[in-house]
Image 1 (tube, rainbow, N blue to C red):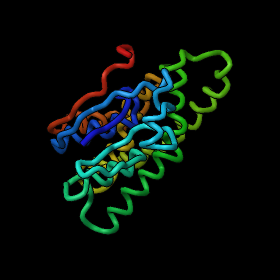
Image 2 (cartoon, helix red, strand yellow):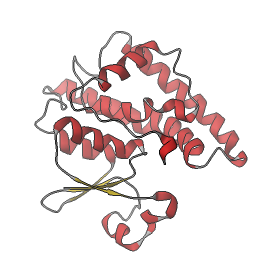
Image 3 (cartoon, one colour):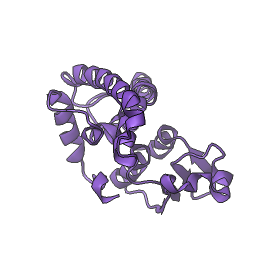
Length: 203
């Protein structure tokens, strides 16, 4: 199996993390979006949308969209809930991640880490902070009474939200007033097989 991605991207790191937790053998192929590698012909042949990550399965199927790939890789494991309602809850959190959480927290981090917070994006950045804090507030309220997002164990819902939440401070978010989120981050980091995202400063 091959995974094309940027290890500093939360959407790509999700796949690195699930492969570590489930001991899934794979070849990691680095892609540098800042050099335009996702717009090169050989990449667009794999994913015409020009986005990472991409997973090419052992039998040659090309998969895109990070949360969809998580679903594929989690099948038959404890990271995919067993009952119908819990499965639906996991999907709810993944949709929340892509539509409410990631567009604010990931984009704010991109503006800071990848672009150095240029002045012409400062207004947008401040708007992303507001949206990100709304998403964090919702997570905090839920995690005050739950160890994980769905059920009593880690699932792909947690992996989806963990990817950008645990590095949100790199984008300027202050997590000091989110004790439930911080405890949840620690629980995931203590899972057997956990692998960390390299610090953004090593880019």
